[in-house]
Image (cartoon, rainbow, N blue to C red):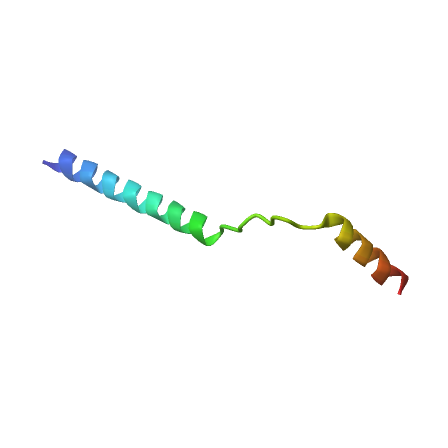
Length: 51
């Protein structure tokens, strides 16, 4: 009897852990930056450095 309760408890804890990991992964997601003109950014830094 107690073995099945422990197994259920273990499954419940694993589900909670997986849910927590998914939540953290979703909250920490940063979309990739696409179509960024690196040369224009470098030129802007150089311009600001001289000014």
